[in-house]
Image (tube, rainbow, N blue to C red):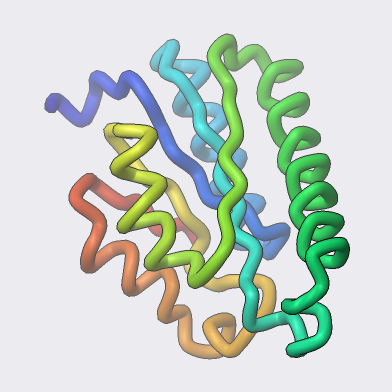
Length: 144
C-alpha cells in the first residue's frame, strides 16, 4: 500500500498527553485522506484488585464507562469532519490486544499510538508502544 493512500487508520487512546497528540494526528490524517478512523481503548485488568476483577458488576460498569469515554473521542472526530469514525473497546494488555486482536478485526493501514501510556508500569518504560511497533503487522506511527 502506498503510504500516501490510507483507507483506515487505527488510533489508540488512553488520555495520556502522548495519546492526545496521537489522536489529533490520526484525526487530521483521516480527514485529509478521507480515510476511516477507528478509535481503540483497552481496559487494563492489572488496574483492578482481585475483588473488583471477580465482580461482574464492577467489570461491566468499567467497560460501560470506557465505552462512553471513547464515544466522546468519536464525537470530537465527527465534529472535526472525519466522516467514517468507529470505536473499539477491549480488555487486557493493550499492546498485545491491539496487535493480536484489534488489528486483525479492523484491518487498518496504519496504527497511530502515543509513546507513553497514562498508567500502569508500562508508562515508565514505554513498553506498550515498543511492543506494538515491533510486532504489529502494519505500519506504526509513534507520537510524542
